[in-house]
Length: 179
Image 1 (tube, one colour):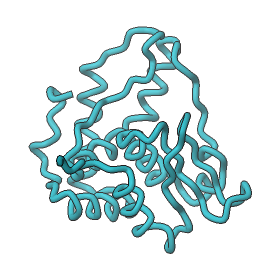
Image 2 (cartoon, helix red, strand yellow):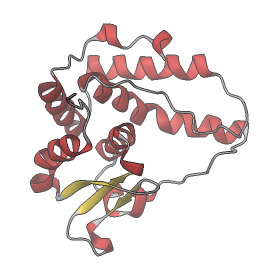
Image 3 (cartoon, one colour):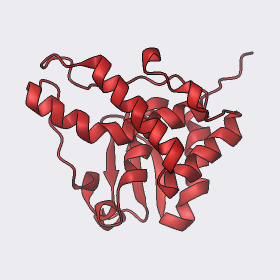
């Protein structure tokens, strides 16, 4: 029998052990689109709901939470705007600017968990974009996080992932050519 390396249940336990008591926040496997649901919306805890049980979706949604400030964490989906697939070139450029930091954290989390990272443009039906430039910008942001430091919650979670999965967060793991 093969042991599954990346189980949602493990990821949920890791996150909840790190943040349930200190930030009243839990990670929840969802059936459809991801969503951040603050406790003020009726739940007893803030909930990070990740899409369709996908491990990568959980890492991505956690990265958004790690960046969101205290005020943002009181708002549904952090109060962020989102335009669906089919964005224009200017809308896509704005999306990419907003996504650099969370995707950089997601990449760090993926390496820590020994899980493959997939850069996301999330605009399959829209305008073309400069994939190498976006990949380079992501790599630069990762290297900046490694040099200057990540947000505290991201640092805590990356360490928990690395400890659990025996992953290493080293500079050589973040080559934009690997994207």
